[in-house]
Image 1 (cartoon, one colour):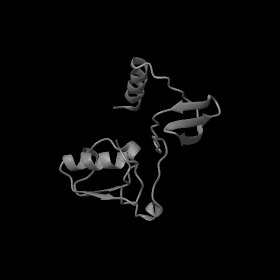
Image 2 (tube, rainbow, N blue to C red):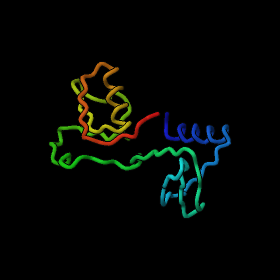
Image 3 (cartoon, rainbow, N blue to C red):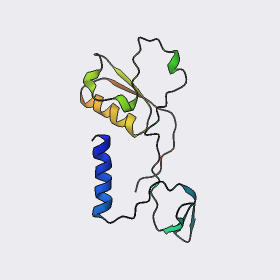
Image 4 (tube, rainbow, N blue to C red):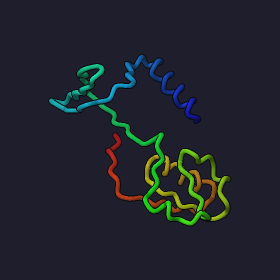
Length: 130
């Protein structure tokens, strides 16, 4: 899905389900008391909810490991935002650095295409999916 298709999908989903979506509303504090979440915002004050989804990421910001700048120019480096498909790479194995959703999806895409894939990750926390 392209960026615009994904945004349209989310907007359509919110509209179909009549979801009260607030944009440009940073959360200042999130607490839980007696099973109810208390979400404090500057724009909307305090909101109460039984469930909260925390979805974070660096979608619009490229992050490269320190030392990547020291690699020889012959080593091609592609940020996840620029990745399109396995055919854009020369033959041979591919190293995917990063265990975020994009890194995992790119590694899977390459593996399904028959490429040898190495996935380099660090320890990072994950919220339990339910």
